[in-house]
Image (cartoon, rainbow, N blue to C red; front, side):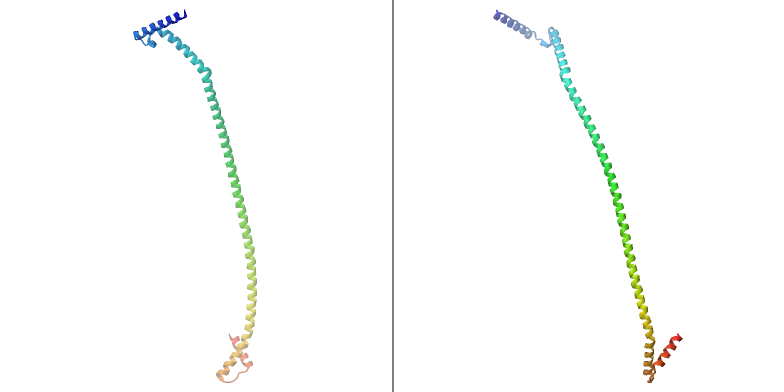
Length: 187
């Protein structure tokens, strides 16, 4: 019996296939099959909709939410790091300004100390030079007074020698000195 039922089903299918082949209608466009096609379309669409809404869309949603959270965290971290770098830059500039002012103060102090040392050294050298100048002037005055004291005697000797040469006679030292003194007073 089984064989006869299988044979009958095969013959019906073959006859049915012959009708379609002989009829020339493409089965999806045959109006007799529209009801079954719409039923399977609704079933397939419903299953596809359930699959998409229950499996695929939640996964995509969670992926998008994870990405959104990660991007938000990255932006927050970037803002935090930017604030830290801005603060570090401000602190660096503040320390640099303080270091420059300290360096300027140290340089000014060193210039002032060097100027004070140079002024003290210059004053010391000027004092030494003034002392040497005073000693030299005293020595020159002493030599001058000694020379001036000897000038009269040298002048008297020179006058006596000239008189001896010119007149041929001898002049006394006393008379030569008296003549030099009278000539010095006459000036």
